Length: 194
Image 1 (spheres, helix red, strand yellow):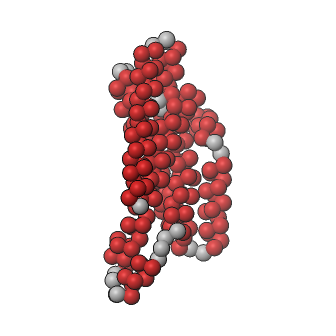
Image 2 (cartoon, helix red, strand yellow):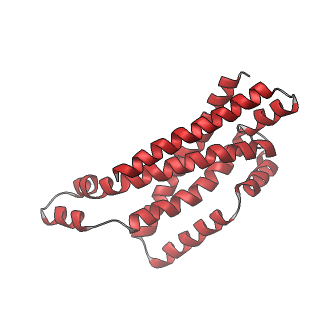
Image 3 (cartoon, one colour):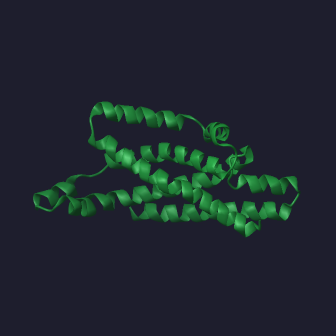
């Protein structure tokens, strides 16, 4: 596999686990905000439990359950992403300024329009920034998980290192550095808009 194909596979690997994790995290964070205190406590405890286990441990657990490979890495990164993103999204929802929503409600505006103009402009930068941050972390963790046998960029990296193919190693490392820089630049521009 060529280095550019490996780089694309790495991007797809990190992206694949981000979309369901972001969706699940946002739904769970919104659910925690709307329902009773006991359910909120249960979800807060479950998220804390998920976040307390390192990704390498999840990787080893999923390797035992599913076998080595990319699917194991996707599961590992998705579980770790759900824990962190749920916490970040629920904090963003807690910090909402409800004055614009109440003003729109007083004007007789429908709920979807209130959400569109009163809530989403406040939440969108935090959601985008949190998702990009987790994507950046997943790129880095994919390297470590691949070294442990859970797929990701670490597998081709360790194979190239074992074959003393230093040009491939440097290409993979430079690709990881560039991708991390790019995600950080996009994330900082999202934070500046908020």
